[in-house]
Length: 186
Image (cartoon, rainbow, N blue to C red; front, side, top):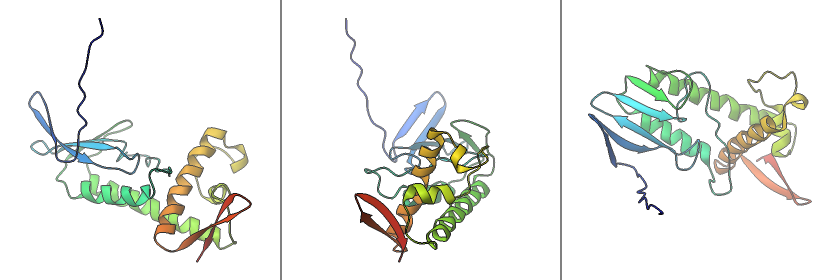
């Protein structure tokens, strides 16, 4: 016998009750287009998933259906920064008790990455792969060439998120040559 389960997608402002806890749904796209945090205002608890991680930054990657994920991530960080939170429970790694400071650190990290993209493009137009190879990555490999393919894929996706942010901001442009995308400073 096949059972039927009705699913109801959660949206911004919905409430979810679990025992004595009453969580408000906070849409926080950036790490993924459908990312959601759960906020318990009475207890000042934020279940953050991968939105705010304490000792690493979440991977923000570009996808064709998610045009400017870094901009969305910054807006989501601002939304969560406005909340009164004493305890952040991330999807993995360690908990956080000062989300305001951690959000400042995350924003600084992404600003440094944006600056690195601009610096890489001072050498002339380049593909996202070549830009990614010039960025600083906190990974235990001695060179870009020694990165495993999966790590390179994550790095290129994150570089593209920063590239698209700068493109939408009018600081760089996308050029097509020989069926390949190149990026250049404007």
